[in-house]
Amino acid sequence: MNANNNERTTKAVAGLLGQYNLKPLADWWAGQPAIEELMSLDDHTLKDILHRTLQNSRIVAGNVMPRRAANENLAQQSGMMRRQ
Picture 1 (cartoon, rainbow, N blue to C red):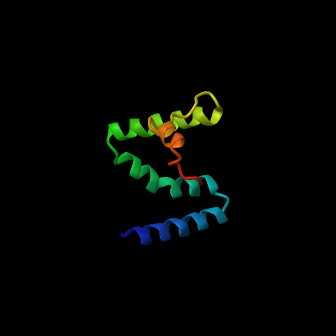
Picture 2 (spheres, one colour):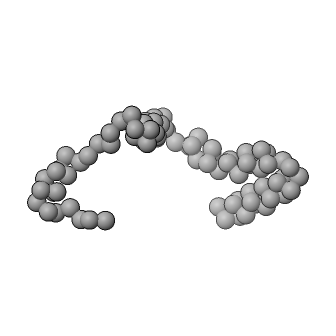
Picture 3 (tube, rainbow, N blue to C red):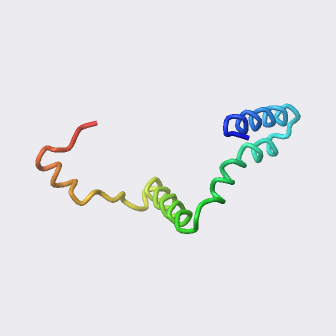
C-alpha cells in the first residue's frame, strides 16, 4: 500500500471512529504512521531528537538562553546580517 492510500485509509477510519465517539481510538490510529517512523530510527537519532526537544522546551520556558552562532557578532558588526 503506498503512502497516499495509507493516509486516505487512516483518515477514513478516523472519520468513522469519530462518528461513534471513539475519538481516542481514532487518535491512536492516526498516530500510527508517526510511531512507525520513530521506531525505524536508530538510537543516536532518537537521542538527538530528545536532546533538541528538551533544549527547545527550556528555551521556550525561559530557563536557557538560545545559542548564537560563533560568527554572528562579527557579521552584525560588519553589517552583513540580513534583516528579516
